[in-house]
Image 1 (spheres, rainbow, N blue to C red):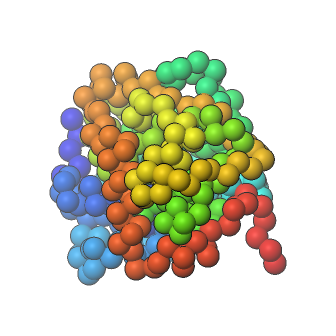
Image 2 (cartoon, helix red, strand yellow):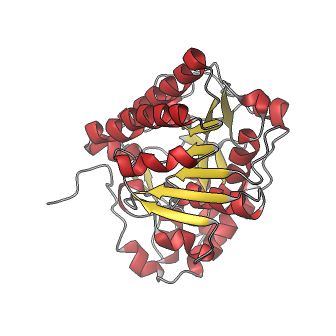
Length: 339
């Protein structure tokens, strides 16, 4: 096993939702020597790193991964976690930039890391590479037929990372988390997701907005489990060269999600409002987690309802009011922003 304790680690996208929780995991539990965060702060937030203050173990480099400044920190790293990306809804209104960040920049990063002698490169991909499930549960050999440029660009990034292993023996791992939720999750802009948006609407006394019939399903995993899983997989020598799925193994429909949130917010009377389906929406996702369990013993710890209750508490205790947060939500966040 390769321990992260004492390692010099770079986390691209480390000021983002999942990335900042991974930084917490690496410093608090894995005892990394130093964690350098590379983040453009387009989607990431300095506030996500506020708990580290001026701690010398944690450093933020504000830079785009498409730039030399964004790649240079990899030259002094033992381990790289690559999370920086632009999301699903962004790809619907700016597919070229989405590909540039998620695919082309990934190729440049993995080459920079390989030439610098990085020991391990963990590429954090997405279940969106699969598109809609053709069979469930979905193992690593499930066909990849992405619905969006985001899914396609993440799949291209995976292919570049796997090629670095196959061609050069570079120590890469591709990890596909399924649907992560929890504190610090995005509700605003084109990165806003269904669970935080639904909580905020219900806290404001408004019903959930459901695109389509609400029978779309997802495999929701709490961000604490996601961060722990990423670190655990990175430490597993048998994971090198592999592509690994992980999630909760529980299938939740958007209808059930809306009902659960309304009940936990204390407004079970708020019946969802159904709108036309969104473009590129995946119909069904459910992970087969047998490989990650066999390699590492990893299983999720946070049950879905307990995790949602945790997220409701987090939003209720935030510095902004639900009404202030609601003002930052775009109900059609896959459309171009007005000029």
